Length: 455
Image 1: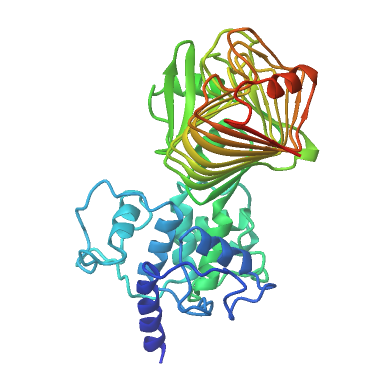
Image 2: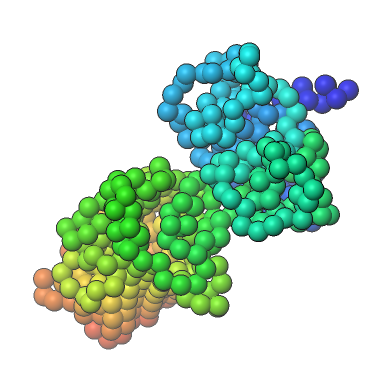
């Protein structure tokens, strides 16, 4: 009977790669009660494409997973990175199998070495135990030394391959529902697997090095209160290696007067202030020509509760506060963006950008610079900016402003409040303007052609 269950689990997981994501994640599965310990994890796993249900109304919470399935889930949780080599060391990992790329990636990253040397086997159909998965997760994080003693491993043999992994997991509160025990040989269910993957996706960091290391797909990063000076971190890594950041998703780019951090090719990434009421989280850069944070080819981004800006006084520069290039589905909320950045937000070929309950202030050239971008701003205050060019510089874009406030902004004769060409459409709904800005909008010759005012 046990063998039948394992075979059924494998067959079900093989279907996961082609099944459609259910419309409702938790509520649609009859075996995922809303108050279950794994409910939030199932919701996360389905939305992030880590796994789906074994049928339209069943997640398969109690189905036992195999090693092949577990390493595939972990690979998907990392954003399905391409293996650098397709040289397969295992005799039992067939070419074209659903877990082939995941296993090759895991070998490259030192996550697994297989189950035997002669012959060289991975044993993809073997049941995955608690010891297996927690060791995979620990190694995927770089096999860090446990920070604190764990009572779970009291009396354990020091040579156990999973001892440090369990201590690390306990330090990171991954076993709180296990009643103070860890049974290494317990078969790992789909529910338990997605819960540990979900907990592993939530990173709590207190410095720039930790932030950079944590960047990746299907990840939520929580920053402790403090100042995160990206320029100071770059100067430190330049002393060791001028190009390697230790993370394939983070690069550094030379600008006119310094370096900037660039985040590349990630999906489902959130960067949050851990406790905004307990202290400000501020991300800064020193060069005027650097963007504070730049994102390229990223989707499903969330920035929440952060203050971001440049340290110098306002002046001539080219760096924006936030920069997006070929990105989509961006949720910016509770942010404070300030100069001396040329613009609060610069974006190109970007869709689904939404900013809410935020402030953009004290920029050098204008408030927004958006090319071929779709964006919505809700309850955003735009203020205290002396524009060299247009305050709202847009080309080929569609912008919606709902209940926004524009105050104490100025511009010279070369620029203006609105874009200088009529290739963009701007909607203002229930916004507040001070007198000069109100006059600028209502006296614009483009009013009715590219700008629509509603109450």
